[in-house]
Amino acid sequence: MNISKWTHAGTILKMNALNYPDKLGWQDKNQEFSFKEWDERSCRFANGLKDLGVGHKDTFAVLAFNRGEWMDIYAGCAKGGQLVVPIMFRLAGPDIEYITNHSECKAIVVEAPFVELIDSIKDKLPIPEGNYIYMGDGPVPDGYVGYEDLLVKSSPDEPDVMVDSADIWVIMYTSGTTGRPKGVMRTHESTVAQYYLNDINMGVRPDDKVMLVMPMCHINSIFYSFAYTLVSAPVFVYNMVSFDPQDLLTTIANYKITFTSLVPTHYIMLLALPDDIKNNLDVSCIRQLLISSAPARKDLKVAIMDYFKNAELWEAYGSTEGGLVTLLRPEDQFKKLGSIGKEIFGTDRIRILDDERNEVPDGEVGELFYRTPMLFKEYLKEPEKSKEAFEGEWSSAGDMVKRDEDGYYTLVDRKANMIITGGENVYPSEVESATGAHEAVRDIAVIGIPDDKWGEAIKAIVVLNDGYEESEEMAKEIMEFTRGKIAGFKRPKSVDFVKDEEMPRTPTGKILHRILREQYGKWGE
Image (cartoon, rainbow, N blue to C red):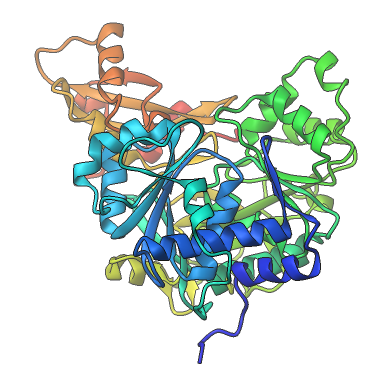
């Protein structure tokens, strides 16, 4: 008997294929499939993996830009009980090597642009020969099996396995506050709970149509994909490699999109388009918009609502580990500016705790702990870090908040000094490690500084070793030194030099990032 009685995404898709076989299931700019066609493709993918020796409870990785096939993959491994490890496409070789080995992947789906990178590290990956799956146009490279070829030769029948929704569906690697990234293990049940609670809270309808712009390897797109499938609404995967604001608005208009989730950077770029472009596109189909991953300023909110006149504006706070935790609803956007809203329907009261894990009074800052049906199970092979993330039944992603007298929460700081640049999380320790390896660097601190486009830009504050001169050339050399060592979005965009005695420190010598952020300014001020 299964522990969990909840149905998973594969069963949700199967039922739509039975009840709404000809209704649009998923679509991107190149292709589209009905629920019946999508269901068959997902069955073929699950069975194809099994034929490669990747069976129930085995792991496999996916490295690809946004494209509709991600929907086949997520639904397919739900049906077959395989665990999917989505890899952020911006990561460098060493990160990919670590993640695939740490999660013991038995296969990997690789899109065309990443074949050269994967081939360069193949000898360090745990994946057996013959289990490299190629996704893309043109001839299949040597050593790979074509994605569509795999589907064609695999059975279209439902996989002969009863997947327990208490089992793991996705292992999502997040940036570690120290050292290596952590594998967040999310069950089918906890993720499907996200879909139900999202739909109840936001009123998602069968005639809606979501456009997924955030990376499909990102938790945001996992959270806002099958939430729509759940109510038989179609999913549009925005398959552009780089963000093109004019194309995005054109796509919204042409495909009659009703909802999308974007970060403030995206909205800024959309609204910066010339009026003659914006005003010639009909975006009246948009019914709801979400701002996520970073705070939004009042002038930006006003501009969004002025342009998308039919849209409700929502802001969300959530995490890979905890799902959707709070929502600032449309009616509260200006009443509680700067707030992340209140607990969503269907979750317990947020606890705000001090360092001794005692509750703090309203108005005082503490660490945010939530209890939701969407909580992750644990960090893969990290028992101590898993234990630290929980306080009884409550869990924390390490964010500092305060609650006002009306019960609204405001995000005050990232406990671990996390930087959010263009909606992506960057932890200073990783950047400091890569940049600090330069021979000229004696000490280094990395912070996020306000940036109108990206929300925060990454700045390195460096103390030089004796014998090295502060100069623009040295700053450029240090920035260039990180190329290929860490992902591009994590590399410093500027370098400042300070004397050793000017670097703010605790009595034990630890650098005070908080003081540096106060010196350079904080996002939102």
